[in-house]
Image 1 (cartoon, rainbow, N blue to C red):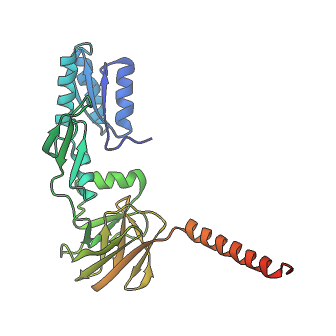
Image 2 (cartoon, rainbow, N blue to C red):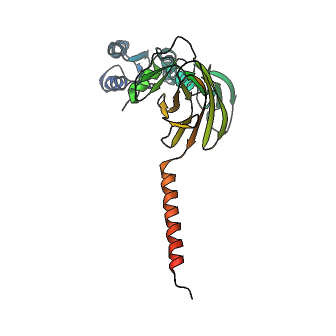
Image 3 (cartoon, rainbow, N blue to C red):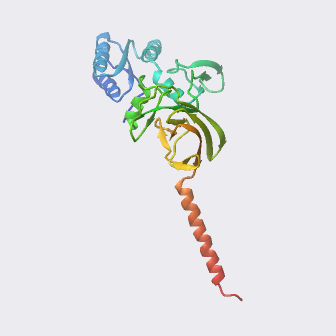
Amino acid sequence: MSLLGGSAFVTGGGSGIGRAIAQALAAQGAAVGILDLLPDGGKDAVAAITSSGGRATFAQGDVSRWDDVDRAVGSAVRELGPEAQVRLLRLGAISHAVTLHAEGLEGLVPLRTWETLLVDPVRVFRVPDPFPRARVVGGARVADGIEGLEVLIDPGFDPAREVLVPTGSGVAPPPVTPPGTARIVEERSDRIALEADLRAPAFVVLADAFDPGWRATLDGTPVALLRANLAFRAVRAPAGHHRIEMVYRPRAIAAGLALSAIALLATLVLLLRAPRP
């Protein structure tokens, strides 16, 4: 299990079982906030976590006092920061977020709050500077799974210049950034078409969910559809003007159509061979 990019808050985390839990959570990648009555134990726990490469913060307080808990959680959120969450929202071309909480979203711009029948109000936030849904990048890094997530939230990874792909060879970003433009020109429920103008070989990235059922063509020729940035889609294309089409054709549908055709053919054969009255 990995908690990379997540956050945890541990009461009594300065010693004993609480400290063990805090260290275990940090070892799995979580940023950990610790609340404890004893300052020495809390500070020692934070030192142990940070010396192992983790992230942690400490606040002194009593778990039975709500004011202490509220202050400690707020302090942890401010110190540990929501950079990873905001970075991933921008990467997904998400412009707005609707939530029932504000904790951990300090990197977003609050727009409006509605009181409803729910206990907590509905909040609307704007995501600052989201990337375009369709864009062009010149470089690529190769990683997947937890290692890939570490790359995506690493400040050294620049989504404006490079894309993350699960296999293949890495490509250094060219000096020209971006090496072209891309735009969506047609969209339906099972297909989407893009036009790209590239000054150099590049990756055309679309921040739509990847699925093995999607098929891609480049100027009418089938090409590999890459899983980009762990969850999205990309096509590699040479320099020039191109039309890229992605069509959803899962193998299960093709198999179902084939079985239906066989069944229909068998029915026709039986009808033709049946004796006539």
